[in-house]
Length: 241
Length: 110
Image (cartoon, rainbow over all chains, first blue to last red; front, side, top):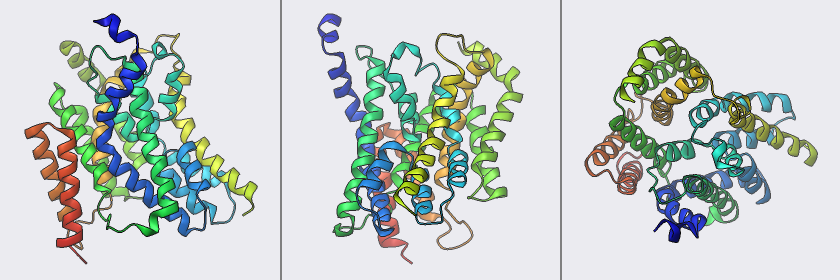
């Protein structure tokens, strides 16, 4: 059986990964459309949103850069803001060091540079069938997500103004995804300290600092608290293993 | 802004994001063992990140004005309940998002 499967590991992974990424099509394409449309309203043709979606590939950063493109030129400022907004990606990287390890070969660099919130959540939680190549499966999940996003940006810029139906509220797809991932992880984990810390610290930081600035203090708080509770949590992890 | 300045501005965005994405993998390359502390973080961080992402999605909700976040919280609860019951990601997302769109387009209209 394994011999038959191993003849087309890439194609099998591509096929298996598609249904797993599919629930994201609507959310990604329509959010992409909103972004492409926004770029159009700022006066940009299709090339800017498509290349930004392709090369930056981070929704919040793309909106920040779009606003900076119609403001006075200040590259260092843009760089620092984008760095701060992307701080959480460092935590995704640390979480994925082993899943995206050297055993994946060169394609790990695509997985690493396309590590957006949704790719992190989906690939971390993926229950990959044992006969499917894990590296290629995660590669295709990430690739499909990026294709949805880039397509959305292009469609939004070219045709967004002509859409015949109301998309208001479609952005909730992202919220739904993260609620689902949180719930799946909650059911899987033996101790809930880290989940509760993530919820609690982020909520506290949001209430104190406000929605513009709360991400960095949240990340620092999570990091500090997880470090302080290391003796307790690592003994729990050992018992579970 | 000239085209060159625009390209530099976009470049700054690309650089800012990708430094954060690539950094951990450059600091801890695969040929060297990952320190025990970082391995610990790699195990406990994801759960905290999922919690953070849920709150992050609710950052624009104002519980003190408008509809007090009622559509967001209701659609979120239904998504959660449906998922705990059926454990079908596609279904939970479709119903949750559809319900939210209906609520903000037809019920809670400004």
